Amino acid sequence: MASEPLSIAQVFPVRRTGVNPAARFATAVSEELERRGHEVLRVKTGDPVRRLLKSRPLDIVHVHDPFAPSAPSAALRHSFSLNVATFHDPRERVLASQVARPLVEIFFGRIDARTVTRPETAELLERFFPASYELVGEDDRSRAADELEAIYRRLLARRHDPAGDPEVRERISQRPLIEVDLHMHTDHSGDCATPVDVLVNTARDRGLGAIAVTDHNEVSGAIEARKLAEELGDIKVIVAEEVKTAEQGEVIGLFLEEKIPKGLTMAETIREIRAQGGLVYVPHPFDRFHSVPDYEHLLDMVEEIDLLEVFNPRVALTSFNEEAVRFARKYRIVPAAGSDSHVAQGLGSVRQRIHDFDGAAEFLEAMRDADITRKHKNLVYVQTLKFLQTTGRPKAPKRRVPDAKPVRGGRPRRRKEGRRASKS
Image (cartoon, rainbow, N blue to C red; front, top):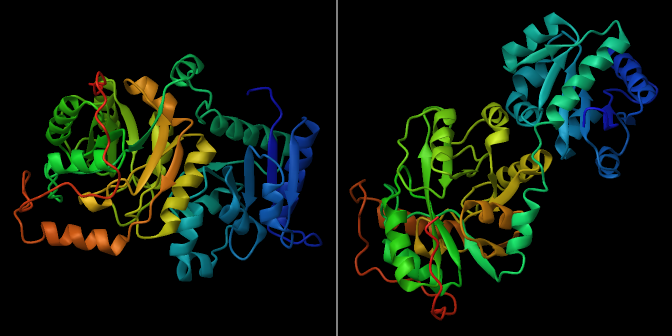
């Protein structure tokens, strides 16, 4: 990638007939980048921003002073590429910094690298939108292009390799397809009352070939579920844990054998997952009603994320799932989905169809070609069931629902002789 030409959109904060320091800088940098062999798409206020950004594959979308209403702010709304922002004007914009700051912060959250052309601009922005701002010289366009090109390539180097392991992919390609739900809880979680046997039998009844049991800060329920699945012989259980980190939200470790203590840093938690040969799965990453890593923490751990949950039916706002899709796409992270079921009625409401697998490596390759499907479940209904089953009960593991039974809703799966659940 170090020598390949890039496709870059330079998005100006003015109309075609306008001019200001930001536009002069963007023009000069665009000309220099083109001289070096890069493809540059110039977009200005008044242009059809969304259509232009979709008109060709783009490595980088570079926005200048992306305050609304303008083409740069529209570009941040519609971009699915890596985004670089350069801020020029050191004057405070009251609308952005005071009145509409929560909304501006959402769109600024899509910026992957922030630069300024003046130190005083960085000082102003850090007061209202705390982040790291790199200084780029504005007087020498060749030097500015050097600095920006280095930033572009640094970001591009962080994208995941979409090819994965072709050898493993080929090995599993002839295996049958199964449906998988990757996020669910049992009564070993403090906020769930679903017994393990009810969970496993409901999963079988609903046609799932594998499930990941992801209890909060505990693996005992998942291990119990795996043992039951081995006895049944026609469903696999991935032992997993949804771990609460110290201050950086939750992360799921897939393919574990031992409990990881809560309260570690995100980096420490990821090391514990890796030590067990597990995969790092980030659940509901942009849901502000859950404990989630903020955007800066996600950027810090991009290389370590194996799977990103791009759809969770318990997320209250569709936009949270859409942000996850955007993040996974631009960093080429394997997308995943799970029902996040806390009641059996929600199990399998979202699932992915993948080739059958044995162990973490095969599972990750199978997920690269997954088809994610959704089955409608009323969010209010399943949340109410959770409330009724858990409210007023002791907040401790192993709570029981009276006379709990598997929830019907699919065709029973016939037991297949000789098929055993994976221990991985």
